[in-house]
Length: 479
View 1 (cartoon, one colour):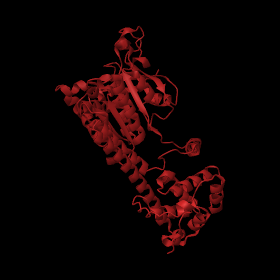
View 2 (cartoon, rainbow, N blue to C red):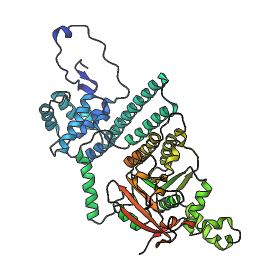
View 3 (cartoon, rainbow, N blue to C red):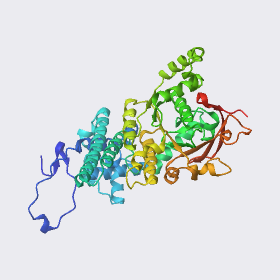
View 4 (cartoon, rainbow, N blue to C red):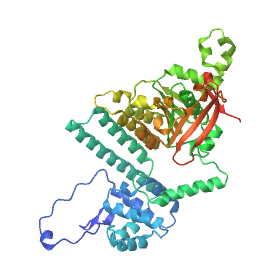
């Protein structure tokens, strides 16, 4: 092996010419090999990308890797150049890459390096399985480097002694969550808009062909689904359901969770205000159309036992989970949700939180804590959780007493407690209003208005549902 070649007879990348006085100085020892960078894997993948007839394999690699996943800078440049050529509809073979690197003045190792990369027999004869394994190795090492960098940052902050344990824990959990997400996708950084456009166009084509695009889950109410763009609760959305006390928020969330579970989702409900048994009773009442008061009536129970047992069996066969732990912090909710997602790998999720302000209650009690900031952090964290787990997160929220002071008591955005950050983070904000709660002479008894006050990608409006709150039951109101 000569000084100008690397293992397998591969030429070393050309380097810029050094001034004579520098070149004549003593040469430092070569840097040690980085165990978190696999040159062989990177070269194997890049060689395959320059070959004709491997479009399917190239597509798989593009869906797995991002330029920043490569550890060698020249390989980062080369993969990014390969992506840019494809996005502009140009050829991506060896000649095109050599020309493009000259035109755009991008250092990719030099012409000799590229030629040998594309023709080296060691990489050229690699099987499809070997190339796929090499791509996986590159991704794994990239994620490992990211986790290591995050861990070092946490250690540095911990050593200063100025960061709270909860903040340090959150940083570690976020790093782990981001690592899991990055390991499954090439989208670990900036991506050209053409990648997102292709997804939108594909969804349009599927709808034109009459195919169902699975981007959300039903609320259980066709009229509300239609108002929500026909999708119901959309994956990655934070949905805030707000109302005054005793207006039916929890009953509505139970309906949402059961509808999602019936559609095949794994549902996790954080019940921080009510016991798990109380929430289970509401679910049985809803599924069996049984008034909740019957559970405490020995006289009425015998007549409704069959309905109760049938509802209990139906619920028992679905993926519904309740976490009744009181006073959970945002960090604990995110950690438990990630574990739940891992335990239900392969199933799509929905997460419910009852209720938003309770997440921050413990933190807000600390001296100097600003309630607005704490609640804002909670809403922001739940939105990030929805994005990370790619599922809807439904959070209940309390409204301020200002509602009671107006003649028209229908809720407005300004009625949300600590509303600013919630308004910003939520993709959908819905209010519940029952006229009969304020007006005994109402012309619409037994009706709940679901007011969609914000929808980031759709219209606002009101849907009317018939309710039987004793059974936690809502149904579309047929006018």
